[in-house]
Length: 112
Image (tube, rainbow, N blue to C red; front, side, top):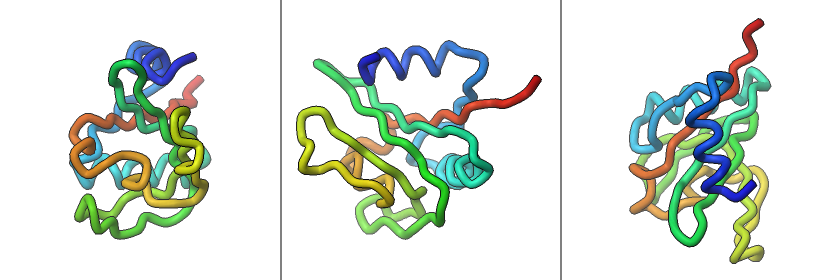
């Protein structure tokens, strides 16, 4: 699936819960909390010709100088910039400072 297709899928699937956008500290805190409970969490950004998806990893949030907030631990593998790929870095590293209002966090529900 493309990043835009993943974004559409998690938004429509009842097994995923929107935690909110990355410009809200509560959303960022919830994302780190879900990941620390071993629940899958993604940060999705929709754009043309393609968006981007980053994974939220278990760990500790850290202060982002670019976002001015505590941000979750993450992994990112950009299609068009493999040299910018990383594991275990601040989520703000995956998206520029002007994108945080356009990035939505989704956590996977595990309810019977």
